[in-house]
Length: 68
Image (cartoon, rainbow, N blue to C red; front, side):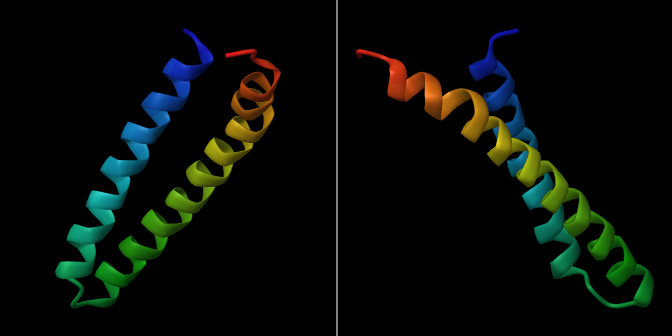
């Protein structure tokens, strides 16, 4: 799998997770809902951090080194 394929799949996953967070926010009523939201936000934070580190490590240096 190419690096850009991996990054694109991460984009899709991040968007799906953001949609799930949005749905939970719309139905936020009980403490169980709040706990679920906290878990989703923590997961979102972890995945987004890894994704941004991947872009910084692989994508941007390759783009800067490209003559295109």
